[in-house]
Image 1 (spheres, rainbow, N blue to C red):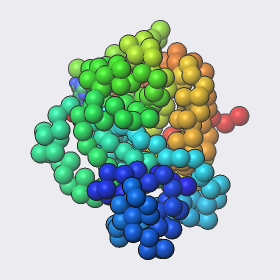
Image 2 (image 1 turned 180 degrees about the vertical axis):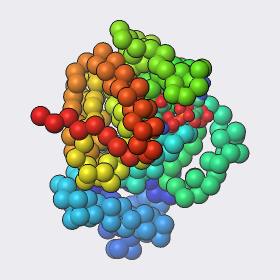
Image 3 (image 1 turned 180 degrees about the horizontal axis):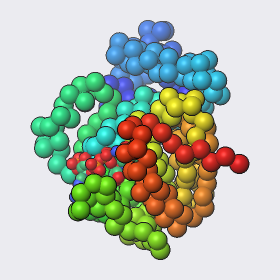
Amino acid sequence: MVALPTAGAGERVEHADELLARVVAGVPGGGPQRPEPRLVDLVEVRQHQVVLAREVLVEGRPPRTGFDMRIAVLGTGMVGRAIAARAAELGHEVTVGTRDVAATRAGDWADWAASHPRVGLAGHADATRGSELVVNATSGAGSLTALAAAGEENLAGKVLLDIANPLDFGNGFPPTLSVLNDDSLGERIQRAFPRTRVVKALNTLTADLMTHPRQLADGDHSVFVCGDDPDAKKTVAELLADFGHTDVIDLSDITTARGTEMLLPLWLRLYGKLGTGIFNIKVVR
Ligand SMILES: NC(=O)c1ccc[n+]([C@@H]2O[C@H](COP(=O)([O-])OP(=O)(O)OC[C@H]3O[C@@H](n4cnc5c(N)ncnc54)[C@H](OP(=O)(O)O)[C@@H]3O)[C@@H](O)[C@H]2O)c1
């Protein structure tokens, strides 16, 4: 069961099976409110079924049964694009949020968007308003500003997967941390948006590994979730499992984000030493 938009129809089809049945049966529209299914819908459903079949047959994962989400990914950098592409591939409805839609479209976004036609682009507030889950993939220095632009009301009650690191490049490379020890960016975001359910996760590994963890040691490495709301952490942990993560450690409340953000000085030195970002920590126990 997946939720897919019918391209151009403005209608959200709740079940791929229903859409397929309508196409196969040749039922025009399938009902008074239903627009006629188009070939593009069928292709999209087929592509999605291939993804689902690969998960079950190749990756050995149990079939997914939940409904897919409307996800807003704030930030158009490598993390935002990686998360948006993977989430869309998994069947979620994804809109990327940016400070300036026209400026982003005028840049290298156009090429990327052409190969990711299911990912939308909007201002932060528009992307966030209709979403069920929000991902903060903005620079640490700009995160609070970007989230303020997304809107306190639009974020209220929602799960916010916060991937940002509070890196300060003021003195060049490697950057230092602008928040540390007795505070963290995750906590600052939670304090600034008390009605939002902030979960810090995925900030401890490079973008491509966040979304394709099985390329390294067949996924036998660890990621962390930090946050005050157990249900929000469960939602994020399920998304991480969908990405292919096998060891998701719940560190406890949002103050534990201090530890994951303070891993960055070690991560940056390992990156310099190894000459690649394709590495991660495995918590052996
Ligand atoms: N790169 C990685 O592999 C990696 C790994 C772990 C964690 N992280 C963390 O994930 C976040 C995203 O990293 P990234 O490498 O994708 O890109 P990034 O260079 O940190 O920037 C991401 C986006 O943030 C927005 N942004 C930049 N400055 C801003 C400001 N002053 N105010 C508001 N928004 C601003 C921009 O989006 P728009 O121009 O579209 O608004 C930009 O594309 C960062 O916090 C980073 O520390 C990155």
